[in-house]
Length: 493
Image (cartoon, rainbow, N blue to C red; front, side):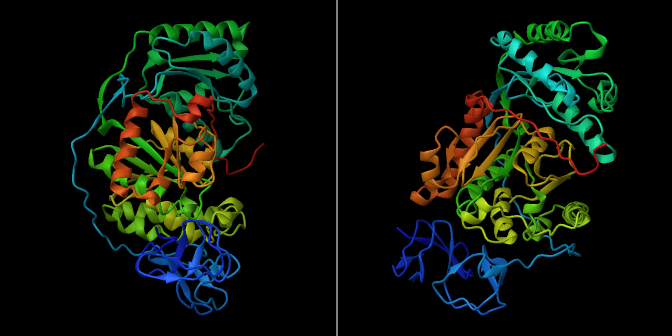
């Protein structure tokens, strides 16, 4: 078995598949190299001498510039490699027109909705319009646990600190996100819980609901009733009673929308977990389903790959705006656009933002880009979509749910327990993590390094997703972890 992997033939580096000791001979398929120092798993080894100032190639693309002369066998990391990224750019469209053959859609068992796509869950949600009623929402959720059973698969409250003292885009985004979640297909019933004096109250959110199924949403303004607990429980019982007779029926996978996210990545994420997600994405979009890739700051350095896969020039221009607008957002706060890899990323072997981005975008597979979404905009186009949202795990995952994702695939090399409002499937990049954190990890993509071919791993992930869509619980659901986070950019009054 190889100790290293060279991802692309032109790469100057290989990635350690296990911890390597200085001086041992390590193979990478077509060659061997003796590391000059100990190399942690997931970290990079130079396969040839690299001159100071030379661009270092990984994934077939530059991941940064050598800050010193690097000899063959040396450890390449933040001590001798720096990013090449800076500022906004002008881009040219060089369409590649990727083709993915159509496939007959698979089936899952879900809940049909009167309006919109089927749900993969039938849950009762309590959405506070403002942080002031968070405790009421949570108290109602605790008391309403007695309503679960039958068609009611769970009762959850989603507290957040916003809904008041916000201005401009922040206020608009809070309203949009809450409206998107209130009309989400995984929801059998929603109690929109307000206070009464907030600037994003129920009357302000209602216009964002669109043509919604009125039988599934109830509204309560706490200041207008004598006992908000009694009034809230009465509305929740009404919703639960309506949901009791609902059952799962066969649904086509072309109605699935799946969010794609990574967090706590390591040097193996772009080699195992993210490519497996990419195979899944191509399979689902070939069936007529939809996937959504987000984390715009983690596209920096790999954005031209996505731009060239845009189906037409209009989508290319939207992608250019998606990238440059986020860069300007960083610069407006006098923050460098390249300070992205976290301490955990770096400990796992990721050095620069280009290194991270080229691994991150593996989740998009090889399909054409067919939609580019603003933050809080719902996905309408089948195929691969790009969504404007930051890299923060919970903010980005919430954004994916708000855009209509019935579940989120979340790859990780370091591990994380959280769950967003929809089932959040944790996919480990390495087997040691999957074995250590069995209470967090749902699917082990590290098996790719143990001989399972990538196409087979992608097919297994598709089968796993269909099982989750049909009711199989994820680790975050088993642990009772469900959270919401809204993107905040501006002033708080």
